[in-house]
Length: 374
Image (cartoon, rainbow, N blue to C red; front, side, top):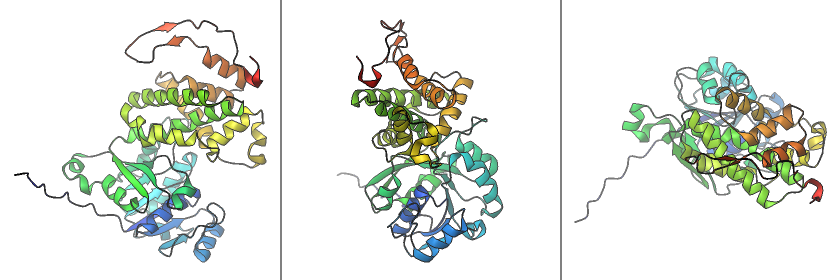
């Protein structure tokens, strides 16, 4: 007779969640939480935006036309946003994370889990964002939510999947249904949003940081007139750069093949809806950086991450030639066409890393056919 296993214990979601950051992604995550029955406090840095959301139930600046739901309270007060919160999502740009954590620390309820929803590596220190948050908010479980997600599609309820990653302590492995990762997944899961749980926070964070840089590379080459072969090559080799960096920092290579690595990279490199892809495309078309996005001061995470990723890679001696090329063009004054020609004519390597091989390129001085030349 077949044994009937007892059902797994269900994880309890967090009932009250604070979302710090009312940009497009923060607002989309707030909508996901409200749709799934959570009580949500959405913090906006600008009081005028908080008042608009509170009065209209919409964020017309970042997600126009989307109703956010009655269970959402918008505020510009960190005290009000965090009072009684059982969990927190921090959804502010990576460059401002330390500042955000310091501002929130006096108001943060003791010991509650914090999920970071920005992607990057801190410039100067080389710290992953979870390490930055751990320094500023000691005593809190720190994790991340990351994956192939465009904010508007997520807010509209289109089927979307993402990874919820937290380190698993010994107690979490004994009772995984009570872990911060499982409870956070239960909080955001439902109505089209499908979370997956991971204990490899390092791998998830590295994938999120590096994919933005690779997306700029794809945009640069697409903008310069190259097509699908080129983009596929950059995506595949970009995933390899993610793997090498993740493993060097203690993460798992296989994490990078999942939602938060290859999945997120594929989405970001597929559409100029991504600001990273859009920036690269404009630069590849020969538009000066100051004139991109019509001259508007648009924050592009990959532009910041290019420098911080390469600073870290150089420090720990990890080769990342695609990211090096993007950083050189963005921050070191390198010529785009010359830089990508050099990238393509580097010595030939073996793809399985177990095979050690380096061959001089057969045509190292022949440039790529920019402008349609052959």
